Image 1 (tube, rainbow, N blue to C red):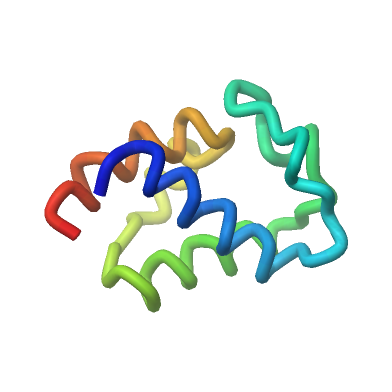
Image 2 (tube, helix red, strand yellow):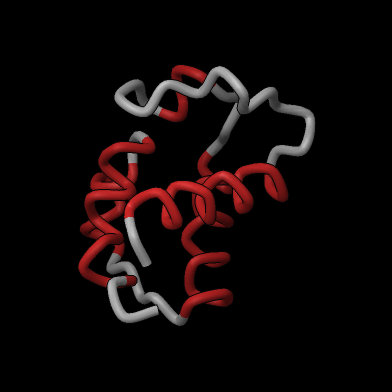
Length: 83
């Protein structure tokens, strides 16, 4: 997957987890929690959805890599390059 495809996949997951959120103005370099009403369970749901949909294991100590869209895409690029 290319970075644009990964971004779209993360957006789909966010839409499923937070259906009431307006994602049209989501800024890639701003933390998700500053832009969206996400709690820690929602964040874990994102990690679980990535695992369920794409078999990607994200160690707990690397959760900090997923704070914004830009950092999430950057983190996932090498893991999803062959998908």
